[in-house]
Image (cartoon, rainbow over all chains, first blue to last red):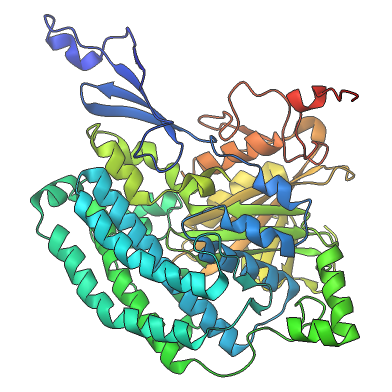
Length: 407
Length: 173
């Protein structure tokens, strides 16, 4: 960290002429272990108090939106993995849902259930990752090891499912890449059986931890009106008591076929946002359990040969499937002209894709509504007046991932 | 605005009708595609329409979803601004669109109505070069402050980028 002092004297210190105080400008990051990637914040400090903070974004900008205009709709799926690289499944989900809305196709029931289960597993992974790193940032290292223990179990399930742990690309336009094996179902059931005890363990470490409470309660409070005005979504919005969850407002997948509730905070402080994520761990496991119980039989890919690649065994045996396979991978499919926006409730907030199509095989314009980026817009407002040590907590409470923020 | 298959005119949509009756001089047309309502406006009236959408208790669009921009280099009015709003209490969505010509690509900022618009408009400025009148802090956001190669999401910007890559010299073996 490099320091630079400004010479202007603060107005509030004029009553103390003997004491020389001045505002301090501090560059925090971009290489800082707690900024979750590469984020720089220019802080203006008065003593230890934050007067103004200006996030400097873009260190991880890779021009994904520009890149999308040059590749086919199918080819963009792996690029979505790299947006929010700790929760690739949900990015895939949000993207394929947007393309399906543009194409006007629906997916089979089984695929909807499989998608919902995997999305909720990803939500649990995301929240576990958040809890571990947030506690680590605040100073409680133990929690990190506990949450990563369960995260490993779930990542092994992803490994079994699609051969990758982080950059999964398992969702396909019109369904999913492959079905669950019996081992995955078994492992998920086994995980769900033991998970409540694990949640109790995290709670035991944090719930009555005086340091945790002192560092999270009444920190970075944001009122409901402000949260809505800033466009916050996900736990930061629901922490302020605003009942806005796209899974309820505009249900997709199998969310309207299972019983669950949306936890809401009261005060809008860091503790409420933590509490919501802990509650969502339980709600997510409830959703997964019910989906696994109800899982219908049937195909896991839609029957739309113009868009969906035929199964591999048919490609090798019949001519027509092979032609379709070749055509889809060589030039993609043409989407009808028009524009759509489709938002999906990822664990960080509303992840949306706005796609403009001109009728060709490539998006004419693809805009990603990244929750991390929009949450950073409220950073200055939320950090104002708190201590410099709280800056880390406030980053953490949004659950920012810079890959998604900078795109 | 051009009608495409699957897109229908929606002059009688409740939200579109309200905008048309309230601000007739700013209203151009409205369409529905895949269930999404888009209202086309004249850019001079955008701020007025936004204020109305935000303040009217029956519309109550309190949540800003995204602001983006599309470049159509062949059209006389080259850029299209796209705004998406949601009402948390009424559970409804609306998309506003306004066209801007290339020689004067400015539009009023809506950051005074939704504070979240501040960062979204900065991103549009950064990527597409559209200037927002009365924006509190219009600077580049994702690209460096001193970046002067242009605006990358414009269609005439090469995908490989501009700058040092152009000056690569290929050496013969």
